[in-house]
Length: 171
Image (cartoon, rainbow, N blue to C red; front, side, top):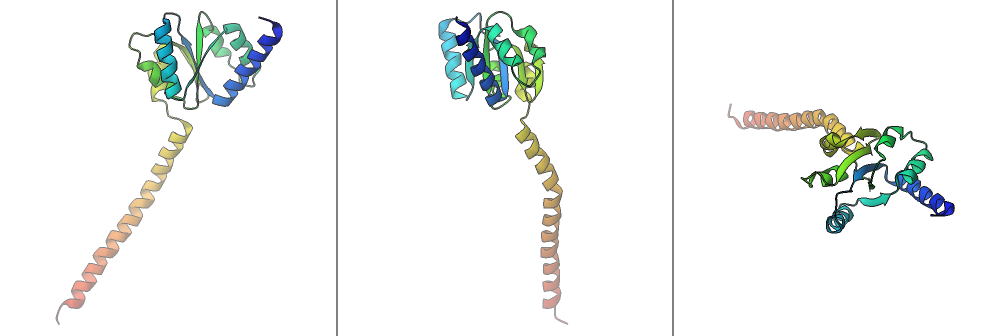
């Protein structure tokens, strides 16, 4: 491969990493053509971009970015496919569907954190996105206000019923 071509690929990888924000390094060595095609189809349907890369080019693309991806460098060995996703836990849920451990997780960068090793798959599958965490916090903050409003409304209905009964009572 020519040096110019490598430069273009490195630039494209760097742009893709910036665009998606979450990516998983996956070992697909033991997969045959049919299972690889099936994985690509599932990735496409889940909104995940699957790219097979040369480790050295991915390493250089990571070095060209502002984020320090050095914890992932040791995982760049053997055959590497990268799963890019806008949702942090989508690739982990997809990988959990494969019971035989192929493809297997090498490492991941999700929600600005590093996850190294296949044992992190369960953690990654249950991770919440920033938007989900914000929604949970908002629900918790709004819950007491809803309770107060509902108590006031039910109290008003009760008070109205008492006043109506007292007004209708003959003296």
